Image 1 (cartoon, rainbow, N blue to C red):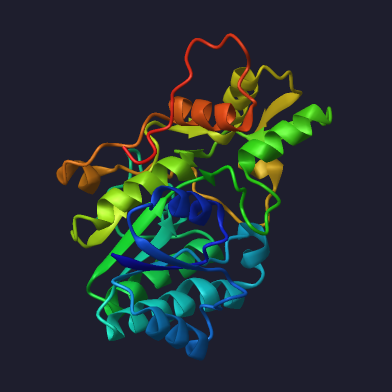
Image 2: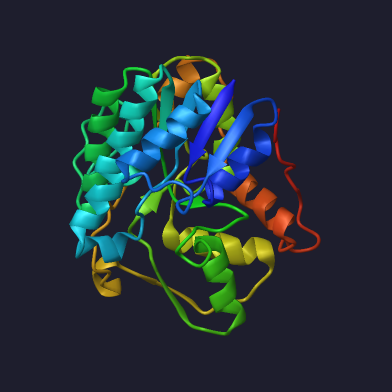
Amino acid sequence: MRVLVLGARSQLGYDLLRVWSDADVHALGHRDCDVTDPAAVRAAVEATRPHLVVNLAAAHRVDELESAPTAAFHVNAYGAWLVARWAAAVGAAVLWVSTDYVFSGTARRPYREEDPPSPVNAYGASKAAGERLVALANPRHYIVRSSGLYGVAGASGKGGNFVETMLRLAREGRPLRVVNDQVLSPTSTADLATTLVRLVSTEAYGVYHLTNAGAISWHDFAALIFRRAGIRAQLTPVSSAEYGAPAPRPAYSVLANERLRSLGLPALRPITEALDVYLHQKGYLRAGQDKVYLPEIGA
């Protein structure tokens, strides 16, 4: 299979390129191909003539985008449509990664793939629009919603990821205020990448939820990070209202991975196991922990 990966310099892109060893992969970052530039997208697609285009390019700085929604929609909706359209033009399928933030967070059970989006911030709205446009532009689409991504490469433009930020601030002795009323399923990009490779081999197109198993608040996830890394931290739980972020977030955005199960593909491992693998890879896992769960890369 010949694959074109756009937005490849992301933390998910890093892990996807690492596990996709049996494909002819052409990887382009933002400087190589701006997904909002029609000529650049067309040139990249026509030059590679791929069987699959993976679009990982995204505007994802949630708080900044709340006051700049045009920027969010330009990349996450228009750019997503442009890539899907040119993929379809050469007969290629498209894989596009969306977010749990397309949901409002008012549900009392994990969101299913068929639940209607109802975003509460500009970032989520731009991603929800992108989902619709990708589906319209290319019937051979994989739209994958995930949540709270973290990977060894760190998020481009964010200076790391939540795990790295928490560890850095704790080591600096900084007091930490982390929200305890936003519940989600933080997901390892290594695990997500492995599952994406399995998914595209099925040619079962549609919308998928792919997250590590379980549900946890940001505060409790931070506490878990410190406990597994053996770090003492000044950690205080606060409400979203007390924290006062510019962009609202869903209070509950756990995703049910139902379609993955229906295909008979392995579920992503539990949150704690995925975190242990990450901490082990980075050399952060505290000595003497009960278990170290080895990566399932390429399994």
